[in-house]
Image 1 (cartoon, rainbow, N blue to C red):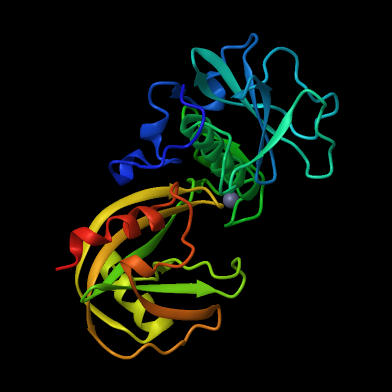
Image 2: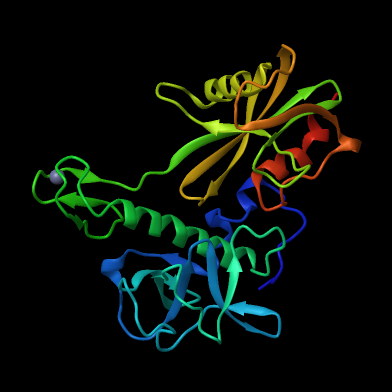
Length: 291
Ligand SMILES: [Zn+2]
């Protein structure tokens, strides 16, 4: 298994966190299918995966649980390389055992393979769902697991609840030989990315893209085309990527979250997001859309 993230992903489907990166190694299953017996652990602690490092290779710990006092029981999520894989939700304050190393999932230079990073992403989304689906949103009673799925049911009011994955849009806007980049105040100095945001009630993806661009930068767009998507487990989004043409307007910062927005030529790009993100994938493809 390749142990560092590649410099190039041929299509958005190949990006980390999408299931395609996992297919060869992971068979997803639900907790009620736990076959018992030994397996491997997927220990997540906040935004970190805890791994065993041997000769620059990161693997998942196996054998007895590396944690003596657990606050929540292990959760079976499927077969990793033919072995039962169980998710561990490690409290942030707990010390990392000596034999394990913390691997930040959002690191610019990750030591994890695409497959392990993607598995950890699936684990993050499952933990987020498990934490937010303990009680019925309708009547407040405790929820029970539905067999063979991640959905849950309320035995008191019979409502069913299913994992919530939030659609977001992100877009490359082209004006002549320039692209529109924006930066949030909280990002590292000089780092820019694409306009992005959550889909609102009643919107299709293209409408959300046009609204977000106008709301954040005062730029109107047209000819909005879908390019691909990426699962984004921070905590549970689906990023839908577009390319669009400039249709009018002058840049004006309208979103308080944005510190700057500007048109950039491809040979004068600032610091960009890491290659594992669809934002960077779209920026790297900009040349295709510049006439
Ligand atoms: Zn209920």
